[in-house]
Length: 407
Image (tube, one colour):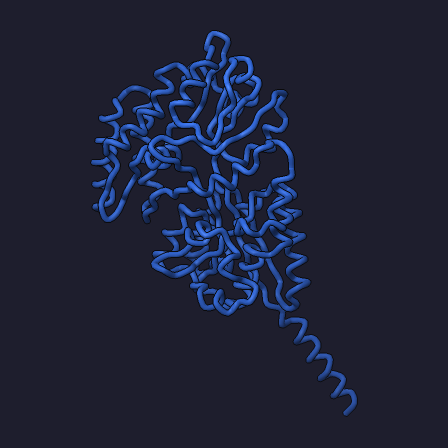
């Protein structure tokens, strides 16, 4: 009898050991440089949540969605996975994501002041919260202080407009010496924002607005830099990327993302940033990534716990800031979590990263997002290269997008 009781106890203990809940997590924001940080965070989470185990898989962004779609097609999606804002609508509109509203409402660790509002709102669809924001980034105006000093002009300030940008770019430019005033890409991700700053904007439903007077003014501003000789042509760049030109001291200004801070910290000249200047109004990029839960998961509670940990835990916020692993999308009132970022040093004006959020705009998103972007980019490229006028390019984009979304 004692042997039976002993065996029963051992089987019970073994059963507890095998009762571990496994959450399968798929990530594109964890590249090779941050695997160690992720594994450390998983260890923290598992220590705080006995009985839950995180099994992770990572993939580079270029391959990520192909595998994700394959997993969904096979009926075996990950329990928790990451989506950027641009792809979120596609998944939410197809019913593939689990709603999180009830769990959020019952969660004592989450309040209305936990997340940056725009980041949280970006991952709601038809009034339902389907994702929790885990990271964000913005685009700012970088400027080479040495080139500004050499040209005898004052540094950019928060009240600069496009006219100030062009004036400074003209003063700095010296193409014969391979120095240009500015580089700003001419593509969808810039155009949607610049169109907003010009007083217009892209609309893709229910009314489609691509070609409008304000949007033509926006594209005129983008391609006008090339026409004025203050932004290098493809031939002048000689195969160099715009970031390479800035780091080499050949650009006075660059419109780019805060993910370039580490790289530019190696530059041998002084530089800083400001909130991107505007036209009729200011508009800045807002890129965000979220953790979402698959609708067909069978470990919903554990999946939510991991999702909330990724989005709101102090451990994750500290790890992201310490390792420059993007920025946590927390409320600006969370000074304890965010102050280490502001104190990191170069660039000195890191407050501009958060000040930019006051002017953040998001791009139009549809189910056929890649096709939409391809159409717009093809027409913008024609305007950039001068094979079409601004008016011709936007008129063509309008017709093609109308045809695309009518299918």
